[in-house]
Length: 62
Image (tube, rainbow, N blue to C red; front, side):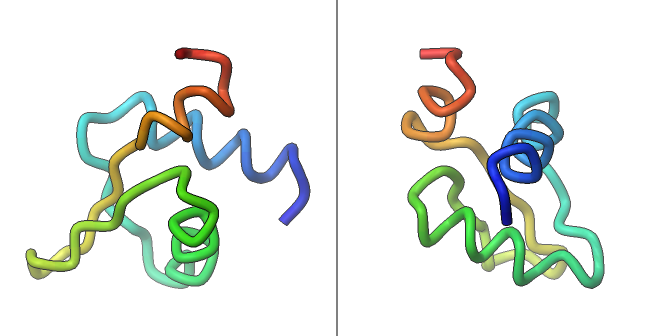
């Protein structure tokens, strides 16, 4: 993913309290999690993602 794609996904996640992971996007979300920008909640049936402090800083929202 390039920087624009990362920022686009982070902005979508940031606009929601808990962003559901859409089918086919798991790989992108897992990449963001590996970068420490989001945390994926795998406990529910529908996985969701939430911003981390590092993700907020990446967007300049720290």
